[in-house]
Length: 439
View (cartoon, rainbow, N blue to C red):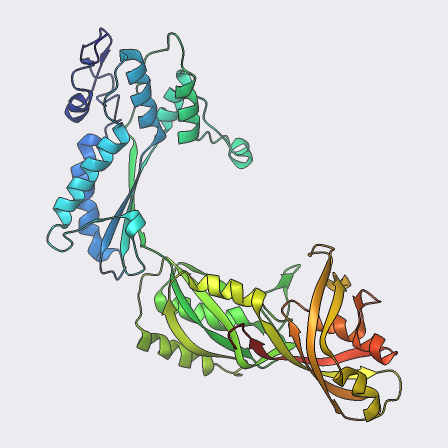
């Protein structure tokens, strides 16, 4: 059959879909007054575009440009594939056709203020994405089942009896079509068109933090509903930024972390706060105001410096920094035996010493039980009395300093305990400095 020849099967199509199929389908009567190909979407495109543009001013976002993101209902792709199969025709893709029409209407409605509507992949942190989702109606899913296209369900959806028609299930069904197939399912109502507004990309605020107390966890921590610690580094920084940027949520990233009872001193630890779907975009001066707000909080437990706006690539530098840096520590150590200043010389002589560390007992429940080779680059000691001294050392990233001191029942070797040939315990530990490869 010639692809432009009409077939006897009559199908009701709207004017736009008749244009798309180029006369390959015979026009039939409307069963529910709804186009059997686009499910009534084409006739509503102008209305949706006009309303979405009108709502831009009240959406609550500050933005410099607009991008458009369109998601088509899998049911429409199913309709298109079945009709092409039955008519042995091959017109253009229905999803491209509808998206082009919708984009055209948006461009017309936005022409005065935003002459160039971007693709969603070109969206930036200053821009707004208008997300248009054309969703399956309930009757569309039922119609798909009638022709043998089985919706997919996750375990949660099965428990709630929520069949979901996906592009994967539709494409899988269309590929295995052979012989005769049933007529196109006819929906009882149009597909839903939902418009949402969102920030083009997450906004990242970078900086460095210092932690001055031994009672703050890195991130909020609760066991059995009971919060551990007096607060957290994340809780001292991220919520203030999220509030100022009016963000929907946030993620806190840092170049490593320290234990709750360890202070982070010196120039601090680099971090980034990812602000998701922020309605406000602040300039650098306004970010500095948030820096002052954080640093003036009661208690002054956490301090931040050098807050600035950054791109997503800041996460790469944080990750590489966590894995490639050295750390400088200061710790107060107790030893069981009576010592003299001369006894500490063995530690003073340490120079690029290899240390083998099995996974510490205290974290083995959440870390892989493997042997890690670390390095202690240098040590210097300050004698306090016959049982106490201060140890300052530089070690490679990821070294468990507490275990390097007490030995972890021989799981870390060598250790301060093994070198001094007596039990040793760490009383206090501070991270003094993070030393990066370029320093």
